[in-house]
Length: 384
Image (tube, rainbow, N blue to C red; front, side):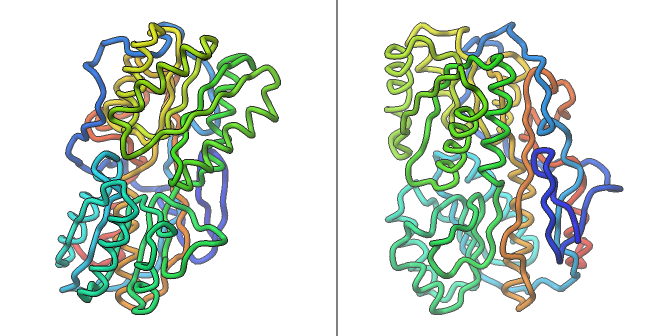
């Protein structure tokens, strides 16, 4: 029996190992992502100078997580597909690039194809890969329930399939062997807890949602439900983002919402890829400095903006760790080894209160969990 720490909470699962208690801190090197943020030091939206002193359990370091225990020899000579949701989702791209790097270190051939935030592309890409005889698939934040008939091919040919950044659902299509994702309901509750405390129970919040991305919608719903139950004087407004056109539609959407509801003083965005557009919308509405901007993923630009006061809140996820866990899971599936059905990823809240504790790498590469899990995986795989 072992423990998975998610936002200060404890989830227990058998068949796994507690990692990190005696390991040293380490963060993977990733190419800096283009999260679309403006220059450091520019006031783009958050209430600069109004630093919160709110501390929650979800703000502590993540130095323990569940992980596989059984050593095995990953197969070599495999040909796999890695499909990020779309190039506009930089978190998807960063994770996919790290998965590609780790997979190639195991001697695999990797096709990495942009999903273009389009379920039609997801369907065609996966279907073609299965028809070509692909050995395994990793999909990053691309909902298989929207694939169409591609997952029928995956299930029929028993192609090992790992899905990251989405939790399992009761009505999911067949074919997904392993899920790897944060718990959106826990994360949403953590967000709402912080908003309630930071605002003294009087927040006026705009929640931006993304239809078609199940976990995003679950997290947004959890925020709204928690605020409704625990924050009697809070007011919640909601608006939907069109993912495929966010570059042109999101800033005007934010401007319109702020003009229609001038009392809004908190905005929750669903991903760091949206931040620059939200900041543009805040500026265009003339609300710079009066709105606390909140997002999630943990891009280096947004971690830096927490430090400078341009953002108020970040719910960070360990994208590099997710990538290593995905490749481990796919390797076990392709080797005919037992694999976990659902790995819960930890998250950590960053605000002005704890950003000083973040390592320098977090501002260059994004947040990652605070121990050397890479060595753990290499030991399990018998590689250097």
